[in-house]
Length: 283
View (cartoon, helix red, strand yellow):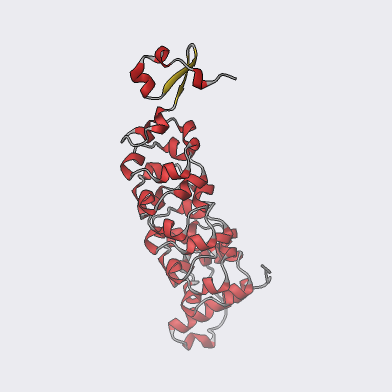
């Protein structure tokens, strides 16, 4: 094994270079310690190769200013360990660019506290990769604000785990757009609790597709609010797909014809919901 203590600093370029911490342990081979030892320079952290970053201690990284961390590339952020990311302060996390945030992985995101997630802007949340979002747990998702949730694209929302979705509370569910609701797959919709589904607005329920509705069990369907059930009318895409082309009826007028239009609409929607609730599903 070569001993760096016996290196001849003069061969590495004289006294100035020796003072910089560069020692030649063998002709043509140098041990460079300057990059880590001189992290106080503005560009020192950004100048490190991604492969060298895991060698920094959490304390070294956490002690850097936001200006110094601004030099990190997306690849460099990706090279950080989850422990290093967790060691970053809320101020450092908030200062990361969207390009840098895009370098975070599932383990990185899963290691962040609610307070750390809370400092991310909607733009930063929107820059997270779908793979990284799979690292969020229910408690972490629950800590997001409606504005942060609004920053998620349909593709990002579709990447959330079924367990994480159970962290959606009243405010977050209300913040979901119809496009976001429609982007959930059947397994994600099925993972929502009956209490969560009851909180969906009529527009959100009307945005559910046939496959999404079929993923719900009888308790889920019958637990929908009156307005939500009314939304499952012939005007909603899902019910229109279920009903198919309308045919003229040859039956004599029903006594419900005398009901107000709103009541007839609600009654018809409730009948359709009950017809779908034929196979109880156990979670």
